[in-house]
Length: 368
Picture (cartoon, helix red, strand yellow):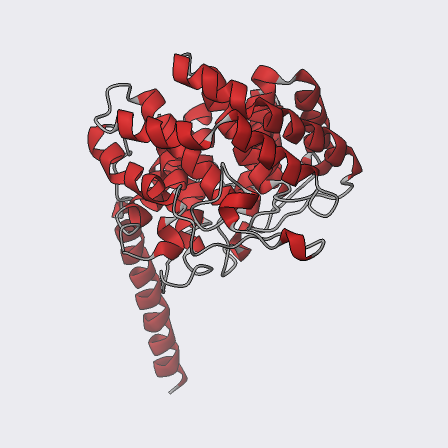
């Protein structure tokens, strides 16, 4: 009887081992699906431009986000923000303008060029920008759009200064007083911010610093120096970022990847690789093991629609890292994230349509 039991156990163990061995080759044969890298061309530009074009002069619905000093503050959005009153909120209007500017900059012969320029030049006037400056200087609204809107405003300024055309030069000269004010606000604020803000929405410090640094490296040495110093102060000793906790339900930014994107711009490449392998262990080897595409369940809900934005912002971070590190797995994962949300923007839901094209376009520009 004991011999029979022993024989049965040995057969079971042997069968189990054989089954495990037989599974191993199957796992090795599984290949990662390859996704196409997006491109900016006439087709994609025609798809993207209308989102921003249709909303930069669409005043309502509107989320002002202001502090009321008294009853005199109750004004129409276009009175308070004559340049950036459309697209539901101030920052979305700003990056809507950024999207249109970059389409024209990258595609000089785009068929809608004249119509787009007409709208842009109508909004970005000297008079309108000076009114925007007065709003930002108001005692009750000095922190308005800190730092998300500030970062996008510097992106607009970067595009205009990089784009050497008569129209761009004129618009930058009009925008300059607000750009100078935002630079000053950043330079004043960052030294006072002792702890970085690591959320997946607007206040994320790494996102704002990353965008501002792109401008500062070219046009503002003082701001560049402060950002580099604060980035190292905030993030240089970070280890083991819990990327498997992401995403949060309302995220449109990845706290871990935004930080990794910023530090890529701050550290020499050799130091960056050492830092990244401590910050996100094994991520370079198999990034898809740590993040999956974020699924959107209801695009009519503005907060849930944030996750489409997360797919695009993850994509641009992965493109930045993948292109620099020559990491094909990161690039393919970026393509996958982009592909999921790209054609779903045109769902007829204004909750996402008023801002997502800017995120998609930024990812496209970072893909090359």
